[in-house]
Length: 545
Image (cartoon, rainbow, N blue to C red; front, side):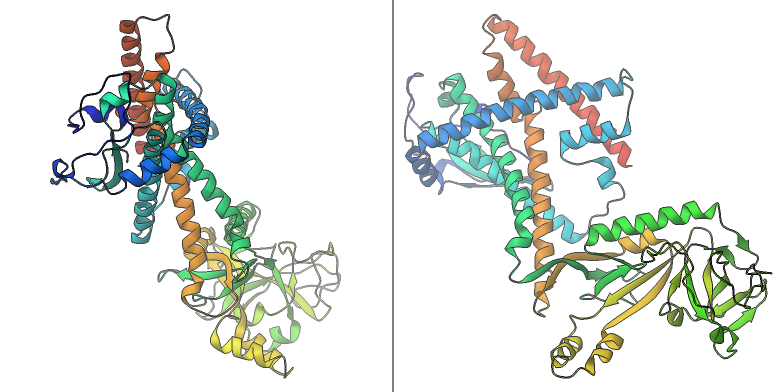
């Protein structure tokens, strides 16, 4: 949220300086702190600061020449942003009036460019208390950067601010910088543009800085963290189906045999699995009393396990497995000789047999079928002659996913890892206690979203250090988006924002227009921009709802 600045601060602001000629600008003014009071009401409160007046003024005057060049670059950027957001507003108006054919991707892109976010990115977004904290802190940082830009730009031109106000309007934090209106009116047009454009320019620079730090963060944290090897679990929802298997600090090694390096690959892989499951639903057969036969993923089960009645229970079509067992069915392999389990001597199955197996034992076996990425020899049947390829039976809409994890960062596993250098026998113990696999059957998209991951692994086991990279990433990303939104919103040609001042000074360069015509053009542009912006906000709000 942004305050009313610059030219508009003259309204209701009583300057304590003496009168000056409009052509002369004072290089130093001392406001009387006794006349500056804080405001408190039921919806608005602020705190005015004057202690930074002299330090900022001295800094601006000392480096005035360099700062003028710096803010002159900001003028070009801000005017370009003003033109760009105006074109986007006209595009949105054309879509609202059905003058332009609406395309989803272009619509999302224009909204993202205009407001710093996309509707598809925030659809279904639920805000937690931590998210609200990130947004609050990011807003304070972004607004402070914006206002200090105005203060420095004015200081290098010889104008000292009267005060800095930090406020909360309703529930939104903000800040503003107060200047004397008469002094700003006396500035040349280009000088005034440097002051007006400084806030938008500094927000854009803040976005670049956040993006650069995010890009270099793996290198910055390299002495303390391993990046991109395997994602580490930070939090598992209590309602998550993975809460029985995973805990904070565990590493996810693979998903369906495919190695996972970060949270992005985790989401992409689960989306791919879900898409493949939906596609295979139309081409799958359904076993009465069980569900869909997933003919793409199978396990090479030894025939002796199938014949062992103590572990495996053969059932009919209408029977059901016990709670701790999973239903499997034999699937044909056309490029190898079939065993007598569920098949005939010529290699073609006479009928498909159903079996109840313990998934914990099955996931440890070799895989068969063409649904596994790890099978690269071109054959979907790699089972030996004394094995049969069995595939799990699934209900429609459910996916079978095998997840491999590691607890190598736990205290016990770290101790075993230290002992493994001196004792080779502990390697098997590490494999059994610190690594494991389990099967999830259900909605993989909901499963993937129920766990929070990070691509950073601490090189040493300390609890608080696990969350530091995630806090930095989320803070930088939130500051990036808030600062971008603030820069774009202040570039809009609407009332009470920087766009109003930018448009007014820009129109002054059109000397062919009289003063009255320029005022009319300014009012029409501001009124139209404000109405269109409100329309776009309403459309976005209802698209979320």
